[in-house]
Length: 231
Image 1: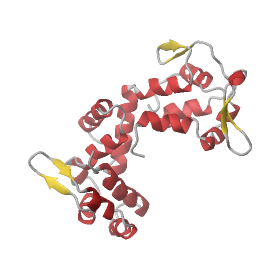
Image 2: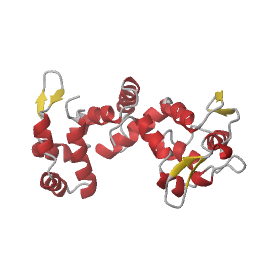
Image 3: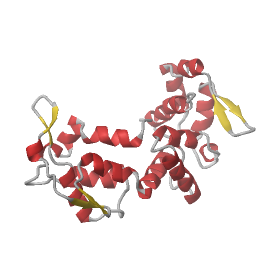
């Protein structure tokens, strides 16, 4: 969950469950299936309004050729792949699915969409534009690191502001993290962080926070530990 976003998308694109769920295994040169290409842009990367129907069609062509057998084993069948030239988001080339992912992660719209979604999950909905822009800049400077985004969110003043659920205080009390007010940075001891990952500690934090679903509170508690580990 905290990996490089490009790597995450590359893995999802060839995951047997995703190939089955969004019909990627039936996406072939003769009859491209647009389901995954559309969801990749609408839900996983840029969001609505940043691509055209032609972009969807061209991306679908690029993802052709990947399929699964009855046991769920993934394979690439070259005879089902469309090797022709494609124009996608103003880029033209003999693109395959990996190329589509590469183009998508480099879009400013993707950086802002992911920043907005992550901040809304951890802190509060509809973050201020300056927060989104700062996180989007971090997305690019870290070369698409989700961990870098989550770390910035968790260490931000907005995360523990009056608008955010009181999860920040609860987590800080449950997981040993030393704060440095001088430079607004947090440092942590790796062994202490790992000891804080006990099921009891995370469950206690989740149970105490009544302003959000327990599973969301537990997820935030766990990601707090991972994101603030020493680099």
